Amino acid sequence: MKRALAAALVLLACGCRKPKEENPAPQFSVVAPGAPAVTATASATAEAPNAPTAEPPLDDGGAIGLGNIGTIGGGFGRDAGSHSPRVVTGSTTVNGRLPPEVVQRIVRRNMGRFKYCYQQGLVRDPSLSGKVAVKFVIDTKGEVTTATRDASTTLTDAAVVACITRAFQSLSFPEPEGGIVVVTYPIVFQPGE
Image (cartoon, rainbow, N blue to C red; front, side):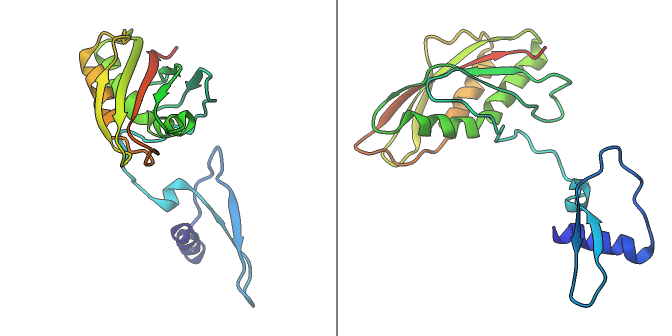
């Protein structure tokens, strides 16, 4: 916000004007005691001009209810094309003392990693689809000690399955009560429309 304010003040001081945007950014006013109000426009370019694109994104902002099948949408970077793939999570199995909703929340927060793996497969095969089920073990410190492809996996691209499995292995969870937790987490991937 400081950068946006500084950029706005520089524009006002030099008499420069930004070209009119089709969808203008929200405006805010700054009033200092004894000074006239200054109106500035908050925009992503004022915050971080020429910012690099992050790969892969780590959060999709989607929501899935416990025990329901949910759809997670959203694009994921410059390789996404005009349509984003469809990602549907199945019923999560949790054996141990860690609430399933906690596991689901952490996996959802990292869904961008799994989408990124799938996107790499779509580059090779635009019709690639199927389920990837990963069985993983969370130790007493909340770290994933092993992650393996479950037998119910139907996605045929071994590189995508391996990438998704590695992404699960890198997750961290709260420390479970009373021992390890074994989770099976299925995700169905389909190309976008």
